[in-house]
Amino acid sequence: MFYSTLLLLIPPLILAIWAQSRVSSAFNKYSRVKSSIGEPGYMFARRLLDSVGLYDVKVERVSGNLTDHYDPTKKILRLSDSTYNNSSIAALGVVAHEAGHAIQHAKGYKPLVLRNLAVPLAGFGSNMAWIIFFVGLIFSAPFLLNAGIFLFLFVVLFSIITLPVEFNASSRALKLLPVMGMSKEEVVGAKKVLSAAALTYVAAALMAIAQLLRMLALASSRN
Image (cartoon, rainbow, N blue to C red; front, top):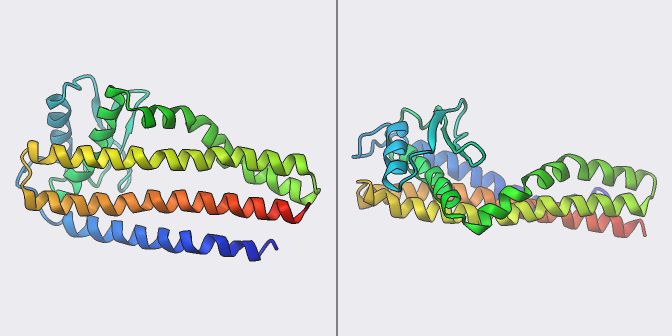
């Protein structure tokens, strides 16, 4: 039963691999195409944020490849090595997406508020759920099995809440890009990059759901 339930993870795993491949392909393709805007990512981010009145949001560099993110606790938009000094269509699309999160935060976008509230519980659940669950399996302890499942529910909920947050940030980005001077043809390229990235979040949500179903199946086999 333990190994047979692994079959539940195969479809989302295949989707995750395919989605990651699409992200790499799309970003690599459009990172070689310079945008007519001509600004590096950090300058574009500053101009974009100022255009919507977010003067208090800082722009900083963070190491890594596509590690771009917005930190709502410190109001900092962090750009990776891939985008900070890059003026390509792909880089500016990613920058606009992260700026979309800053706008969500400023406007009190409810799914983002819920996701931020869920972060501690999701983090704890991600670290501890399977440990507690496996101890429950070893000792045939229903309480521990249920506790593990309960904790993992927060991981699933977090991954589901993340979907509208990411889709909405991309939608905001694609509306902002032409306003900031990107041509229609370039926006099409940016959309391909952001759409590919969105698939990774869908894959993550499906993987979390599949893992929860596996937990339920394993727990049921012990009853």
